[in-house]
Length: 340
Image (cartoon, rainbow, N blue to C red; front, side, top):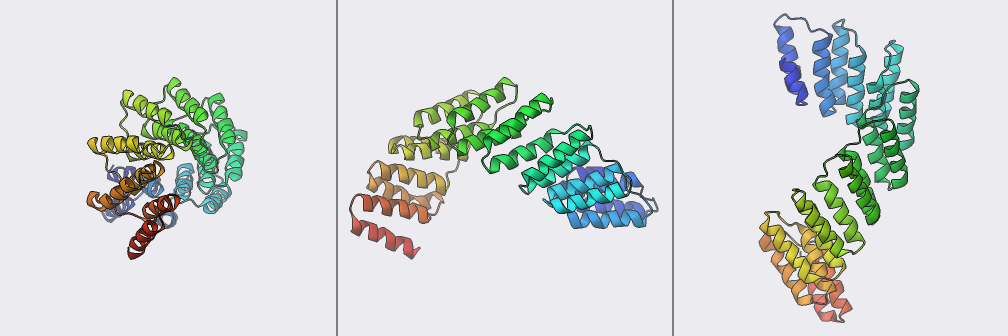
């Protein structure tokens, strides 16, 4: 029981301690004891510790079973070691242990974690050939991997397959798609996936809404960004620093310094601490509106709010001075920037 408690928390050290105490008390460790301890290593991705435990398991004349090998593959997936996962799969087959859906799903995840989408899809095909049912985690790993490279259409096809195969499409999968659309500035597509998410009864979270707000910002559509923040709050989801940064960035792109200041004030009133990205967007909004003095005031005020200006902060003002043909002012800020 104690081993399992530690294992569920990913506490490999605690699980190993309990296993050793049990054996020191003269209680022989069986396959369940070893497998439960191995689960702790799977949760924390400790490959070396997991392999050492499996060696100890063999020395104790306890033969690994399907659960053992699946746990080892889960360790490999968590450790993002696709090559090692395939080695363990081959050893599993050599030992005559038949793979199941969890086995192939772990191999899919291991390949997807390192961005090898083709390999992941190959393992998914093998899973289906074997007549096993893929789990949502395997699909999620592939969708996230595809979305990272911006291939939204390919990801959408995979989600359609999930739905056709009656595999649960969770918030993580929807968020990956919404975020990928947002990075491309495709508002309509991002909004479409958010609406489908809600229509399917999947609860949209702060990441879902923030991604759509980000899409609006990329498209310089401030009214739409603000409308989504309003919808988000109506749904009972509180905006976080990412949300506010995105809407302030939309203000900056539109040169709406007043709106940017409004959102900063609202952010502070809600107890959300602004960061350097927040202030840089605010400075950019002031600069784009032609109010260099206000941009300078905000940069000067940053340290008082616990945020240090970076190169972007200074460069934004320097660029604004250049645009306004004020070379001496630009040089002064360049000197301050160089002085650190």
